[in-house]
Image (cartoon, rainbow, N blue to C red; front, side, top):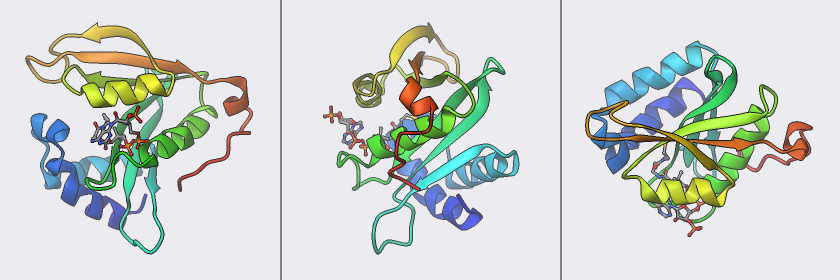
Length: 162
Ligand SMILES: CC(C)(COP(=O)(O)OP(=O)(O)OC[C@H]1O[C@@H](n2cnc3c(N)ncnc32)[C@H](O)[C@@H]1OP(=O)(O)O)[C@@H](O)C(=O)NCCC(=O)NCCS
């Protein structure tokens, strides 16, 4: 992800009800993404043909869980492009990158974000805990993780997103 990508992504991130619920503004989203890039986190973008703007993005911290395991902080596909398999392809790509850093990939899903929970479960994630009022009052964060299989860890999985 380049700084220009981050600027384009920050335009639509706050339009997503999930991130609006957390009070995210475009300026804050841009600043957080730049912070991730500068910190050396792994930020990926998904691209589709003939469209210079990123179709989606993922932000992974290689040791973001317990200082030990990869953590998927954010993943998002641009509104209007969701439900066509891009998110699944991007998640598979992130898993192949995460496999270089650990055997499991962890993430949090808000209790009200049932579509994302369904998405993660379909991709093999298992709920491991629940953190009430962790990020904002009144919302529980569900902790999910996936044990990355030997095939992913050996790098055989073919990335399908940039
Ligand atoms: C969750 C998300 C990344 C999935 O990407 P996607 O491109 O829509 O995913 P895919 O097309 O590969 O898979 C769609 C699946 O995700 C689910 N899904 C989640 N949100 C969806 C949405 N807004 N529109 C369509 N499907 C959605 C569907 O139930 C579908 O499941 P199914 O195939 O079993 O019917 C994307 O919907 C998104 O950006 N959502 C808003 C941000 C968010 O919730 N991020 C995750 C928490 S950080």
